[in-house]
Image (cartoon, rainbow, N blue to C red; front, side, top):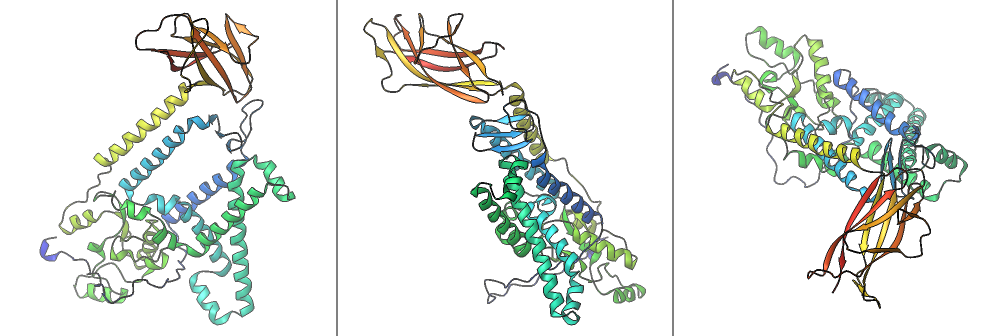
Length: 489
């Protein structure tokens, strides 16, 4: 194809300077479609909602004195349990790492194929899909609803509307109920909720999440994606010409026209596009986008317009793929007679993938190497040191020992770095191990104590020595340390 026969895109309508700033909302009722992308969306919906609703009931044996729920956010004790992983409050950096990983995965998905997250995995998309499926199950497809407005009785329409909203509220209620189950033992809390003995905060959060799910998924729908969500505006700055997006291949579809008109033009030897202007792609879009006008902010890249268009192409005997995951650059290349290109592996995607591997590797390594105990030290600030009557110097510290196991453990405390150092625990310690005081820390608990370090030795001119406190498990021998300083005049 040479430039003289190049098919140009239809010009978009000009903007009216006198148009209102705000457009009244058009209620969108997408039709049901069948095809590859619809099946993918159904599969992901079942998997993601199944995980969300059932995961709190999955058990995981962590031994005695530990909760048996596989995934649990224990706010009362400051713990997060995820199967064999237990995160303490001072390990919040793991949560930071997860957020960084989530952002990088989102960036990688966008660089490869646009808004994959929005179209298939976003909670707003998943629950809206479910609510629309319930709506079609009760009231029928949009065509059926339009017919019912003419033929069905008012009683039937009211009954169907009441049934739809009841089912919506039931789904929304269980959505809120499932969320609170992640913060307490799920079977116990379910029983408490049914018997009316659950904490008030549980009922409050269930009510809040029931309301938000019902409103966002049942009523606002595409408004959330178009106006409330910031990601469509962010992802536009992160994409490039090689990212695959749901694209109308106007090089093949234009000039568009009705099926009969197109057939007549072809019979007369006049070029005609494959698009028959049936607008099934618009009718299937959950946000009401006409993909033939190009990439738009409201398009969530779900691929349902592809299924709708392929169905029509099969009926009229034309090749599928008039709408497909493609790039604008490839459309232009085909117009110029060039072969399309696919560059999935490029600097942007390799950078994101590399960062994901690095961050994930660091998190896995630190999780694998972290111990089951910990100690932190805080030096007294006022006074920094005390001169005792016998001429020795004394510094005071606050030690916090952490036992991350589900069994009680005994720890021997030692200090190193100060010559002739004498360690004394405030309150007195009756048990010692090789001359070091021993304290017992309960299962999955912390123990705070005051430690006094004294020395008769002469300090160097810097008047400060590095000091290291070590805590050793008497039985297992595992040792952890914490550095500080010993101050003097």
